[in-house]
Amino acid sequence: MFNNLSYMHRYMMGQLRRIYFMALPESKQDLKSSRIYYTTADSAAQTIAQLAGGTFLATLMSHSGISDANIGIITSLVSFAALTQLFLINYFKKMKKYKFLVTVTALQRILFAGLYFVPLLLVKDATKAFLIVIMYFLGQVFVQIGTPASQDWIASLVPSRLRGKYFSIKDSVAVFVVSSLMLICGMILDYFKKGNIFTGFIIIGIIIFILTVINVVGLSLMKEPKLSYVNDDGKEMHGRLAKRAKEQEVVEKGQSILSEIKEAIGDRKFRKAFTIQCLFTLAFYICAPFNSSYMINDLALPYTFIMLVSFIFNLYRIYIMPRLGRMADKHGMGKLLRFALFALGLNFLSVAFMMPFNAYPMYILSTFFGSTAWAFVGIGLFGLQLDFFRSDKRMIWLTLTSSVSGLFGFLVSVLGGSILDKLQKLDINLLGQKIYAQQILNLMGFLVILCAVIFIRLRIETEKIDTNRADGRVKI
Image (tube, rainbow, N blue to C red; front, side):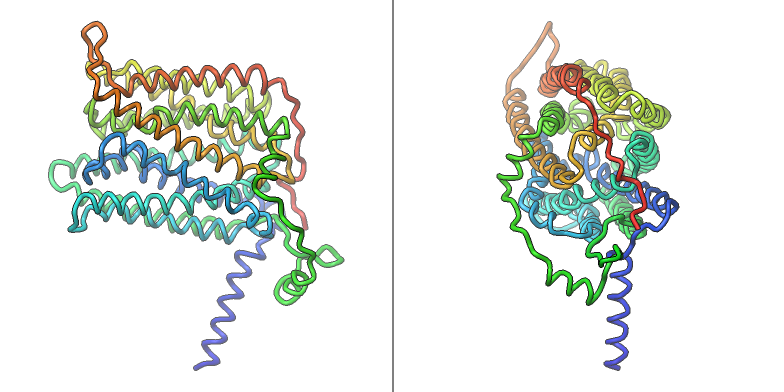
């Protein structure tokens, strides 16, 4: 019996080692398959992010007695959670492989499924709110820890000349999956809203659990073109050979966090990419976290209408994304990012003019601009960083950018929440029309976006790009 258990244990550990530490791509087909698996995994991850945020999370929190301002701040915990990456920089530098870390952290998305079962607990609203905040924050911490590693991983699987095309196609698939499931879940909440909304919460929780499984399986099937310890013939070593090589390895003293930050800031291209990331973060978090509750509570827009309009314009977004990706590969990430950010600014400006009497048409207009913007904003910001960051420092600089801008985003959302609270206590009227606090915040976001657009035109598009030819190649 003991021998059988020992054999099974060694067999299982061997399988885990093969899947997570020995999965090198051996052909171009392996690279292509890995990109497809990543598209599947990322589609599930993006759907989870939407179901554990936006109008769905706002509804969940509202039923747990959380105010509008606090809802905006809590949803911005995703940015504050990114700060944990900063304290793990030296640990990341020592890692030879990222696959196991990314998969384990992805598994923790199961916490988001648990959020939707909290309202079923027979406890006070204050306790429910506390549990929601803790589970949401812990889930975001794990997601943020795995984000830089997953970004570096997928970047190593895609040739630089095809980045725009691949990421736009990947996001097109993700948008279709996300919009379809969100439309279904919006209809579910609308159906159960009048009777027992807790049943709707249970269904959404189960959907998130299934998506988490898909996410983890997709990542597990991917290959990782990253070598650990190699012998004199350039072959990767495992087991006892790798252990012996690790013991003989001369461990260099890692740079401190401050030294890494100082080195990064000293690089001109890093400063430019980081600046545009911070301008985007300022514009987004000063207003966007508070828009969902504005649509639901102040404008009283039905969930089904919101999801139906979003679904229709997401089809439009899916249509234009591959075209924008190919244009970016041809004309440069900076130029396309400038136009995408301007469209995002128009989205904020549309919300700034959105009131109860014109909510339906203005929501449609704002969604059009938002869909146009998000067809490339995420791709453009990430692509710009891949273009501007040194390949040998890419993992560290992605971590620094994500964590520092994340902390900045959280502080901005706290400031936005404070401004929102103060403005809501005032009776602001213009030409006899009540002005809502969210309208003022969105106008502020629009003005910051204009600054970002000007910065890209003057400082980003004029920069020469050094192409990294190592990505997307078989290395064995």
